[in-house]
Structures are given as structure tokens and as C-alpha cells.
Image (cartoon, rainbow, N blue to C red; front, top):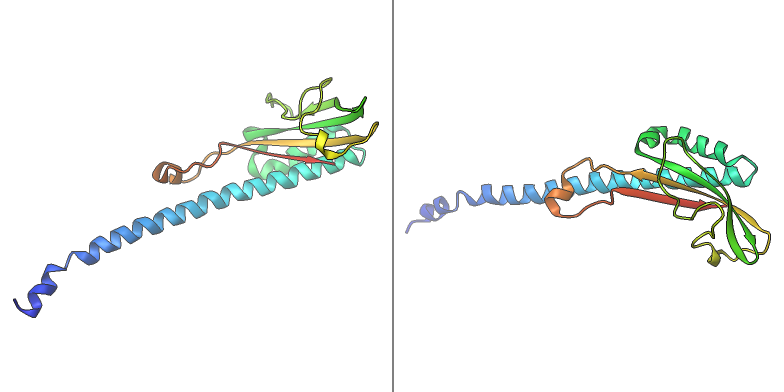
Length: 167
């Protein structure tokens, strides 16, 4: 067997290795794009919820706070892909009660905090005192994947992103 016949037998190896490495790199790039976009949306939702809750706590009406959140969320199409709910919670009789609530126009989703007249869930651990009022803004967003990463890799980004701020 000559030295050259051995090289001839390995001709297709480079092509196969290139294809395998390219598939791995493509999966990585798609993952970076998908998770980067989802993380960017989540960051935007965090900013919007904090801004809305801060405005409500400083005296803006709940409806006005929601409108500002929705207007500032136009860069991610929040009006068509989700919504916002602002809630005023007051501690009465040792329990955090929801005294007022306002949802964005066209949004019919439910608040994860609760409904007017009910007890606010997950607020007991905030250490609120009798008579104290806080404001919370929840922002919901229906996330659509922009790459086929989930289908190819079997990893999915949540279809609904959620963020809440309390002031």
C-alpha cells in the first residue's frame, strides 16, 4: 500500500467534519439569537413594570400608569402581544386586600395578584403594616420564537413572559 492510497481513502472526512461542525455552530447561533431576544424582551418588561408601579406609587392613577406602560411598550408591540394590569393593595385587618385595579384596553387576561375585593396573593411576605398601601404593575407578553431553535433542539422559550413590580 503506497503512501498516497491512504490519503485517497480519507478524502470525504473533511466534508463530513465540516457538516457536523457547521450544524453545531448553526444550533449555537440560533440559540444565541433566540435566548438573546427573549432576554431583551424580559428586560423591557422589567423596566415597564417598574416604571408603571413607580408612577402609581407617586400619585398617578392606575389607569394613567397602565396607559404609560402600554405607550412605552410600543417598541415590542405590547398592545397586540400582551397587556398590563395595575393594582392598589392596602393592608386591612392584617391581610393585603386589593382595593383597585386597572387593565390595559383590550387585555382580558387575569391578574396573578388577584381581583378587586380579594386578598393579594404572594404579598404577605413583603412585611406590609396595617394601613399601608402598595402599588403593583404586572406586564404580560406573548412571545413568539423568531428562529427554529426550539424545533431543532427540543428546547423552548416560554410562550408567555411575565414581570411584576411592587412600589
